[in-house]
Image (cartoon, rainbow, N blue to C red):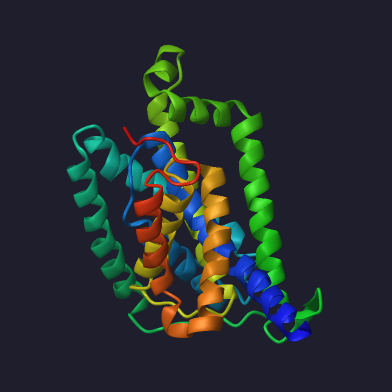
Length: 293
């Protein structure tokens, strides 16, 4: 009996860690959609860039990789702003098909650019805490997982305070709720688009940093699977809903680890498609979903 409880606790704790990276990726995706009503299929490539920026600074400086969040997040915010200005702003409102082709094109452009700069070899970063474990409710847990959970929580709290308490955050929420109404009140909606895409990209960059410090391998083509999982989480939680992305990420992380324990590692990625199909059948708008129209 005790062994069964330990397994359940391990699935829950490890699922919480796995969910954190997906939560950051899905939250960024949802923030962009909420304000701009644009689905960025190249969002996984932003995670990949965050991973490589962390790798590069780590190789050059040898600093604690967690500290390098201070580099990956601002740089990805800048990348997001550039992508929004050059790629999405010119075609915004011209049709979803144009947005889809732009984002799919970006996938190949970013992947090949990364391969040109960093080669297509698989890379890995070793955390200074990788051999340290702690006991949580009687279950051994890598210290890195706890740091990732705490870091993700702090990022989400900061994002919540920004959106709820600051003038810019309130303007972003107003743009998300009623774009035309926001324009009539004097809000610069194009600036909100730029900021939402930048912050969404920054969250993907943070996910990329946490991805590599957790011991995950990466190469220029690794963004597709995390992006698919993020889309499954977004659909599970509801398009445009940040609370939905958080809850969806937790559900997904736990479900993924449950699948590993019960069905084997081969089901780790397949579970995203199973969740995606079930949610589309049972509740197409997701848990907290809103209409995309």
